[in-house]
Image (cartoon, rainbow, N blue to C red; front, side, top):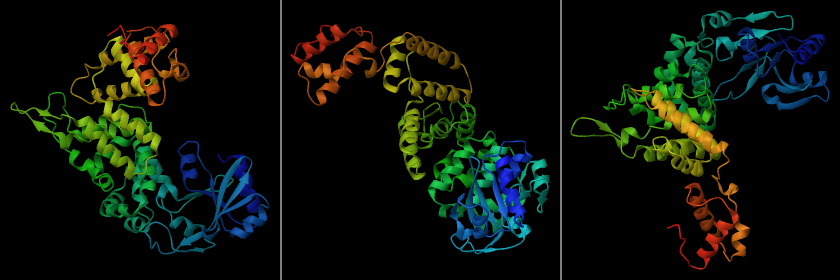
Length: 443
């Protein structure tokens, strides 16, 4: 179960007279039959002793807390001395650590039972807290007293939800009670750390039950979702409340961050835009624009990177926009969005419809996808890069500064709409007449 380069580290520590065990998530994943992403080692050796055992192969990544990174083969392995944690005064990190000779004491400081197991080179498992049984039963349970674990490090609240969403586990009752009681502690956690855990959560295969059960916890850093829970849309197109619709739409896209965040945020402006007509029917005029504004505030609050943020905001803004199912209509959308974003938008529209009362719109999306494939397959000009003329051509005609970009966009519109062919001579003639003030004969 243990890779050769990891086993070599365990063996050298053992031959030098020290205990050495694989520990934490790698043991959990190995027992689940999954391929561990990282292998961590815990040992009775002190950091300086580890450095002597592996001369020239160590990096002092966290010596203060007992951690040295050892290079073995092509792998970086964190080797940490058995330790007891001191007080967590900042609600995130121990103020100090005390090295110990006891593996049991080291395991006792860990977050959840499924992460508090150790395995040595011959496959022997040390499990002081029932982690193996919790793995078998599919349970996330804190080591020892749950409230104490969350008081020590509030990020463990998000980790519990994330592990449940990824593994499909149930959160044990006392652990669930404690994370709810302590949820306000999340306010003290850096946005970047929340964002990392939340992204893994919503990309988890089993995220839907967690979103349904713990919206009050998530609302600590996403207060905008609170009003969505139980919100009756009062519209014949919608058979679910707004939060349930959102969850089902998230389930209907692949577990990729951009798509999952888009579906989470696509209707977040509906509560504020809600109106009821004289027949009692609910409407959400302007909600895509409002959803984009609210989504941008959320993305910035979570410190989302610019590229991902802008892509999500574009998809949110376009999610309810009508695209005519004609070559001209699809070509215009492709011209505005580009092929990659347009195909993502179709996934968003499909998922949105899958979470509604009727899925009749699916055939229309199929038709739009067929038109997209045809236009792309024909090599149709849909971007400035494909246009038969460029900025240098227009400069030779006397265009300068911003008028170059404006004229290129004008020419591209003519080509995309089918008014003019993507022919260099014809387009240069139109641009030449435009520069001289002559009106294009196509208008």
